[in-house]
Length: 426
Image 1 (tube, rainbow, N blue to C red):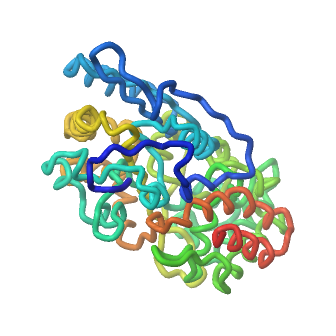
Image 2: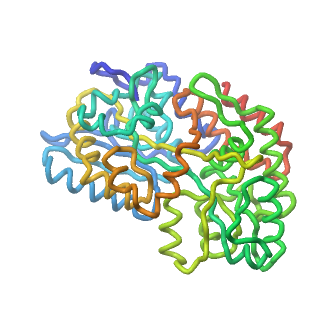
Image 3: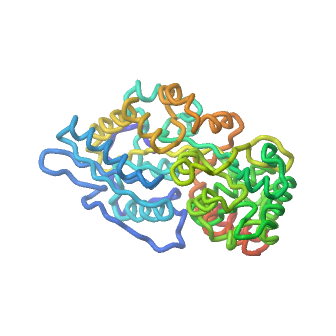
């Protein structure tokens, strides 16, 4: 998100775009789904059409957005909202292609936005939200959504990560089901004993496939005092990160994880945990609801993520909405939709249904006692976040998603991280 002035800004082919935020998956095949119309959608008759592009969080994401849109259009008959839903696997490619072809959505739901800010493509928050809506955001998320003191990201959902573990498998392996591992050494020992049970049972679920490899790797990096850097510098190739990568490489090499960990995506692997075949895996708030729906009899517990020395740390994630200026003539319609969406009676049921942590004060107050998010709220004080306000982060994230799995496939950890760092620095 970007730019606090309201001048017309077109995404013309002749304008030099750095598109830092969109180089994340440059090596993949592009899959463009054009909205039609200059700047991401046209007007129909005397009304306005807004194009909304969102990723899939769950099987119900599309239906939840359709419900929001139906309510909004009923109150605003002169505004139509055109919804497009993409998977997290390809949404970066889709967005990049749309922007490059002058078909950027009017409103986008994604994680990183800094590159768009640098390219002067986005409205600032105060241009497309009422003061009351802005004031309802929790301060920590506003800081994570701002660059140079100006807020561009509109915090949508928040998530922290915790370790889920199968108490029955712990018992069968001779482990104390009430004493989950706190350190890497303890985790490795537990994973070895659970894997030894056989029968298609795996000690630790290690998803380093492209879906969310940056999250799994980041959890290990943070657990060794490493990380991804900050708003001014991306730091992938560090001794702390290399040591962490070598450790999770050892888990895969010693057959303490599921087969082909370097290509396994998070979502299907969590399903394997829910089926009772994995001893430990890092999960997120919706995992609790998924267990309740798919295997309510699963005897599981949650615990802080294991780190090298047992110090508490977790990954915090905040995804954002952002509004593209495009032709500059849809600002009022965008503001109407966003203020409607963030109203407590609309936003809180939406984020609750998706099983995430709300980013608004009103939502936090309403859902604070809900048992499905309480364990994650407790972890937020120890959360570390992606450096999403660094324009290089999207390139780094894409490189991590496409390359970090090679560590689990046996490639030297140092070489992989050096290559990722080079791609981020480009």
